[in-house]
Length: 242
Ligand code: F6R
Image (cartoon, rainbow, N blue to C red; front, side, top):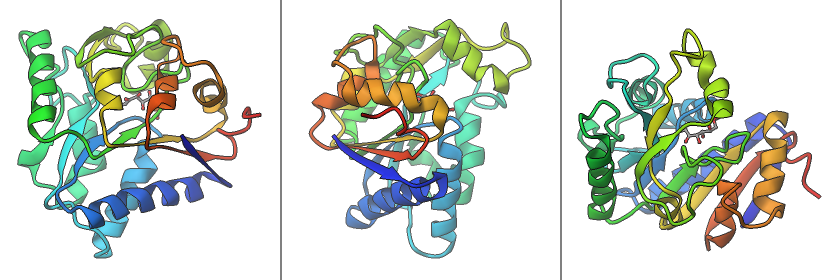
């Protein structure tokens, strides 16, 4: 695992954007694994900025997002479909037909999950998987104790994850209980992984991911197995590293 510690949020985002832009410049038809959440918002802003400046085109890329809430339609303002549209897709030249998210409103979510896994494979696998980390060590919605061999499937969200995500909903009860997420094994098959963590709230999870034992109780620790995983941190997120 390559760990890059940058002095502040801005520098961390710029470094992560450099890695993504370089990947797309080297392979214009790269398959990108995308993530949502607060950490990614400044990154998508930066990528959109670089696109507008003519430094990068996403026109030939394909994307697969990590996860989507079950029970929310793509139009729901709290869905990850909506997030991606607002945060990134509307601001760059990516072909909407080549953007993919799990179908959270499918009548058979497990069939939708199986189909999603097959689509990733049909696309040739993911070249660069972007990841955030939950305060409980989750990646995607692979919550603590998720199988390290897991594939795309339905996951029950832990109370702590629902509490962390409640800020986007009107109440805790309205915060979805289930999601479709790509699995830990799906993530590990990506040719490169890029995990970004910023802010002191992530420091403990970051230390467990990098310096703790490889264990399902901290799904992000599975990145210790990956041959080409890069972790980009700001100083606050790195503050509990030895
Ligand atoms: C989102 C996702 C999650 C987030 C994580 C961190 O697609 O897969 O694992 O990356 O929950 O979220 P933020 O950045 O909001 O702290």
